[in-house]
Amino acid sequence: MNDCIFCKIASKEAPAEILFETERVITFLDINPINYGHTLIIPKEHYREFHEIPEEISKELIIVTSKLTKAILESLKPHGYNIFTNNGRFAGQAIMHCHFHIVPRFLNDGFKFRPHPKSYKQNEMKQYGDLIREKIKN
Image (cartoon, rainbow, N blue to C red; front, side, top):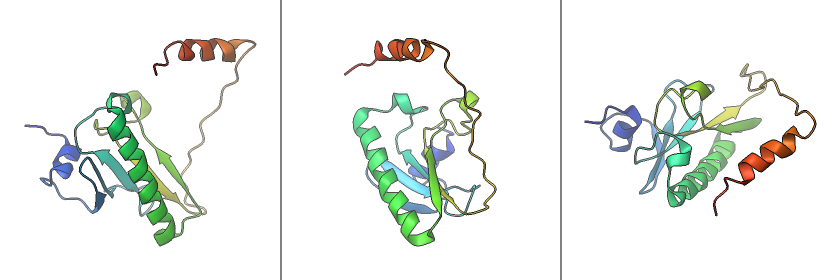
């Protein structure tokens, strides 16, 4: 038996405030929102991290995320929004089922999403670019 709470929500074995769903994707309100209207978008099938998801489902996740973002903007009228996904515990993933967050942002909401940026030294940007480019598969 799968004890993943998101799998249980996707199969309707656990309650959630479902907003929209397709055959392969389901969206619902986060039970512990950063701001009200904080929405989660998940593939119904269990994938631990984003890179594991087949391309056709990844495309559907992005399309559904866009649809939900527009609905949040029209209904809640936030000043802005964040869309993000955490992959792996080190990156802050708490539920090990890949999911996107849409967080409506409001003036003075107190949520900080500002990492401390680094700077590349001479030629480092090209070196990192080369490392990544050589692993890109078409």
